[in-house]
Length: 475
Picture 1 (cartoon, rainbow, N blue to C red):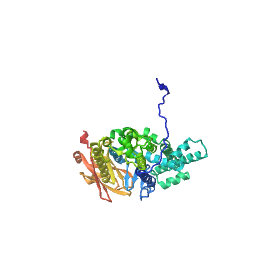
Picture 2 (picture 1 turned 90 degrees about the horizontal axis):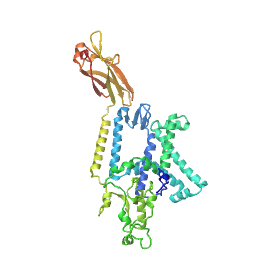
Picture 3 (picture 1 turned 120 degrees about the vertical axis):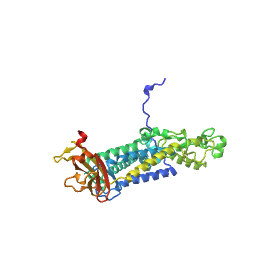
Picture 4 (picture 1 turned 90 degrees about the vertical axis):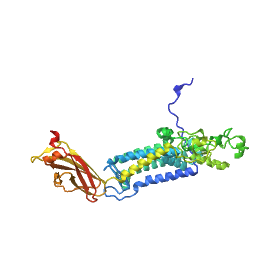
């Protein structure tokens, strides 16, 4: 019997050295990467005129607890929006996965984007795959030290700027960068940049596919979102293996017709599809959870098929149902399915609710709280007094003035001292005290009334119903 005591609990990490490839999916990946990096690295530097905060288009101001997104200002009270965004993101992920598998992982995931960039850095400095493999095997000398050091130094530099850019979203970018490099920045800023630099470098430059295979939960539960009609990167095993399996194109087995006549498939066993895979799998072994659907193996196989004169599509995006059919049709997105339509419906509904909520949000948030210690006060002239606290939040970028009146009770019952109007600064909140004094007879008849708060500049009125406590209710 084998000795299980010698078995390791962990799989040994075998570094993956990928080959570069040209093709439509590689071009698309590069385009997405350039677009994503342009948005991420340039957005904090986009100016945007503001009155009560730094003139920056995207700014998550933790000091004043406000998030500025162009002309939209998000407050802690808008936490509902965050919940909706998380739901929309999840629904979108499920919807895309149901249609085209792990397309998010292959093209848009942050881990993929930064790992792809770091792999390109290695290609640039260390050379193509054969040169990098030779470099790994050779003894340490000046060439190896220089190339590996230069590669990782550039990765660390990219990681540093990634971390600095992330911090810029939470502070005024020009000031933060100036203070950071002049040594006058805050300790929290330096600590955040250090942690993010290390994490980015370790995830994209060292761990790479290990994050996708072992740390990311999406790889594990994606199977429940796959269906027989879901498009995924697939190897056409019937065409590739034939009756006698794959073989190299030797004499008598070079043309497509010769291979078909001999019973061999179109796969010439070049291994190019494995060499370009960023997670190191062999797609010819079938659908695997490690596959991130990046399509690079499709480009690699198509290039080989072109070079030997065979039809393209040996590896392609296709569905399990279509591949198993006797007469497969051209691959296409099959969206008329209950699960996919359900995801789309939930996505459309929640997106509509979010945009409606944002579009109809008032520039002012008001709430009234009754002071209940004591519930009421009986004045010497026989009147009954209740006390209230009115809390006003000005969500605009300019100072606003408000007037407070009452409805369903006499106007002179409101006593706010010598405060005819309330002025609230831009992006600030203010709490004011109000007293309601009613005659004993009227207090006995009054159970509810309304405060009416009017924004002077726009004329917008906000009515808040509240209760009134009287002695009779507590006899």
